[in-house]
Image 1 (cartoon, rainbow, N blue to C red):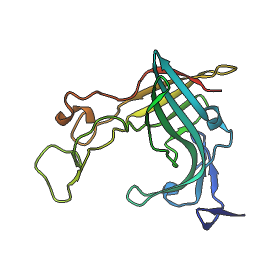
Image 2 (cartoon, rainbow, N blue to C red; image 1 turned 90 degrees about the horizontal axis):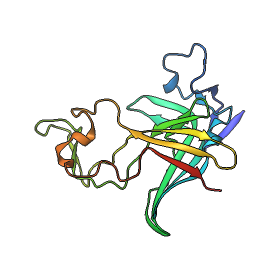
Image 3 (cartoon, rainbow, N blue to C red; image 1 turned 180 degrees about the horizontal axis):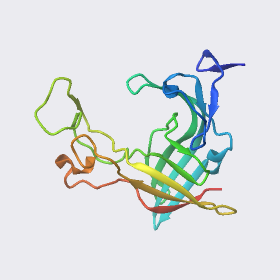
Image 4 (tube, rainbow, N blue to C red; image 1 turned 90 degrees about the vertical axis):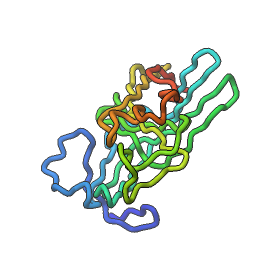
Length: 211
């Protein structure tokens, strides 16, 4: 079987499933280009569509789109595999006025192992940022330091949980930080962000699917 992807002919991949017992895989399977995390149970379909949260005159919408057989490749992280996943876009409204619309992503940042909990990384594009050093470490500048003008978007981890189906499907939306970020307990601890809001988007909310 020959599959056309991104204009290149590639051989079909070995099918594996997120969260399943995939047997004894080679140590370097995620860098071989020979494996494909496929949504064989169509769990991702449970989240596809537009969901919204309304609080008075404010409205927050998230649209989840299923991405099929995306080629995840990163030479520095030694990634080279294929995957199905969910990409997202969000919008903020004041009444009927659109205040902000995030960029449309064409790569998956979310996955699920059971069709109930969707996990991945959310990008808070709308948050005010300032110029930062990369890597973000404490100390004088070093060779190879990159100054990112305008700052760095915040990438909190995100959990989406399906809490109801039927005629009015609902999901629970939760953002959180985890791990240590290269010298800071979290990016929010960086003193240059003092006085800025923690997030520009609502958190710990229930969203209802838009018909």
